[in-house]
Image 1 (cartoon, one colour):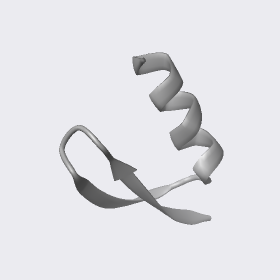
Image 2 (cartoon, rainbow, N blue to C red):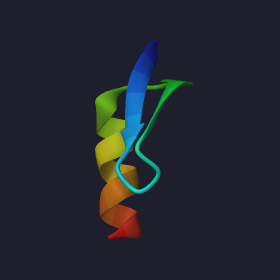
Image 3 (cartoon, one colour):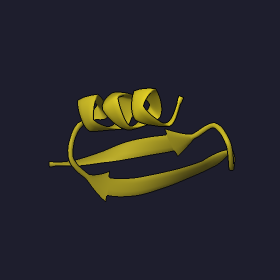
Image 4 (cartoon, helix red, strand yellow):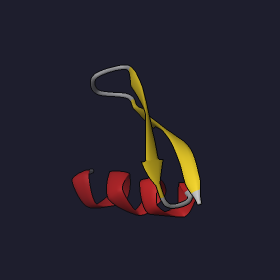
Length: 31
């Protein structure tokens, strides 16, 4: 499914495949 992902660094919303879990894991990896 496609989800709305928010990038707090660039303050940009993007539509990308996957779920919010993928975004959370991504931010934890960056942090």
